[in-house]
Image (cartoon, rainbow, N blue to C red):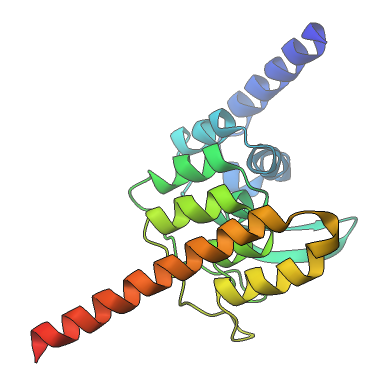
Length: 187
């Protein structure tokens, strides 16, 4: 086990040294995807330190079938619930929290809510993500979370979705109050 880890670290280090142009090599994109999926924030740090744009977009699929088109690092980390990586990305000064995927127009918040990632939803809301934004199907993060709750009710994920729904509803109420307060100030 220790030997496998050591070999993996050597291979990762070697790949970092060999490839200077991160955005063009498929090996590095696969490694980046792996780091995002399994919450390996130290790997993502290496990519960012090497000069990768924090809003870098890539396409990935399974066995030749296209699943997600032009997604950002934040979206991938959000949909897999990689909380440490999400927090790392949110600390980056140039992060575009409202970037959408090109297929459905979903933001990182919508993806996290749909996939039941309650800690990621909380982190995105705390970072200022707008729960009112809608995707191409005219669904907000709250509506997607409610749909997913119905679909996964039998699987036992109810607690995650209850937390997500209450967090999103509270964030919406706060934003509504702020908007009405700003209106009163301008009148």
